[in-house]
Image (cartoon, rainbow, N blue to C red):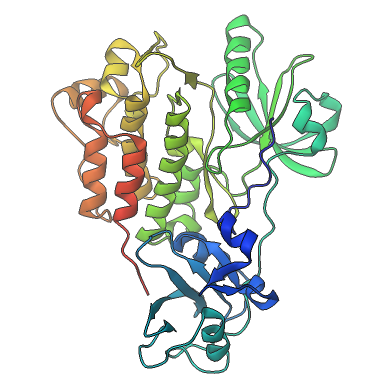
Length: 409
């Protein structure tokens, strides 16, 4: 079955909460709580929900932290920022300030809607964003192949070795991205079909979603979801990206590692992981994209003699022997971390492609970026272990990145 329901990223309550109507303090959820209780959310997701023009000052939500030892958090929009208050449990109830204990979280919220929380007045529940569908319609769930007449091409968004990507429309209803094959030879057809086949099998909130294909006549189309803010490299170089704090950058890196951990679990490798191939959507949600070089592997290594590889992002064993694996993707992820924490900077900025292999063979690794913490740089260096066996798995990288975040009120 292709469809896996809607990507309800912004409200991830557990099944037991939804079924029992419980979720805060063991009390049954009521219509008021339905408005302000958002289930499990990260600090990053919460910030991007609250800091929108549709939410007034004092807009709030209650969430479960992704960190098990934190529990419930009351998050409030104050001075165009998100302020977070941990809700503690003890003394027979719930509290933010120890001398003011409430029987349940709903009572706590009711109190602080009429009384100051520190210096902040909470006002109304955060506006909920509509979840984005993972498919265009019930038609495309069952039938990938769609006629070109259903799609309209708009502006070009980018161009690669064998395809161009356009902003597009499906039936003048849904915004989509359309990848159009530029050339007409057997090799390009094969690469194009491989990309489509891999995308059909992959469904994850941090991987780009395939909507449809059109291959009845040239040029071939691959139709995917449209990410409003473009690729991560350009986003980080624009004013919005330049103003992101380090915690937000870390959360973007965690999102990419989460998508790659899923890819790893599906025995698939990307082979072209870089900031230019990560797309950014509303709420600064990041998704790994451009699966033109991706492969499903049954052996530890996939061997390729392709000489057009992006050297500055490629692991040494892939440069020298064409050996690609999950661990070569990990090396590339280390370069991606460098791009993120230099706000879209160029890796090895003073060196040419043909110098790269000699550099890394000699033991050279890029120095720590000026705005990058030591723990994050340590993770980069783990990714750049000389042998594949030295490098961590993406699941470990995701955990390591999460551990660098400290809970912030």
